[in-house]
Image 1 (cartoon, helix red, strand yellow):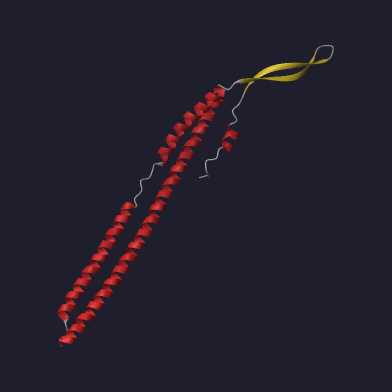
Image 2 (image 1 turned 30 degrees about the vertical axis):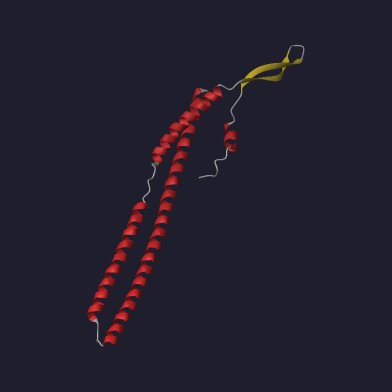
Length: 190
């Protein structure tokens, strides 16, 4: 009986350990997937904002350039090259700042998207240890189950004929673990 119980304990421990490993592996995969999706969204939004800011900057630069040329024409100056060159340098700096800020924001999102994964092998080991404890408790519970008296009718040859007699025997009640486990709902499967 002890060998049979030990086999049950080891089987429970292995299955629980494998279950824990599967859970941690799935959680790790979901963490990575979620972090990647969040990063992708943040990167797209940042690039879209940078493009919009760059477009607004170009529009403002074009308006300023047109105004400068109109003012030069009004004053009778042929070409306001110094003012246009200065405005162009400022626009180029502003555009470069937009690109730098966008790149820095994307780098920050990448750093923030790093996930702390759990070790599936450690989870399996811990699950196996917990399964050994659980299996041991189940074996103890099985050993502590009460006995029930079972009456059976047997035919006995008495020399004069067959005589039916009632025989009493005691049998220990069993834990029906398979029915118990089937009745549990863990909220889905892995």
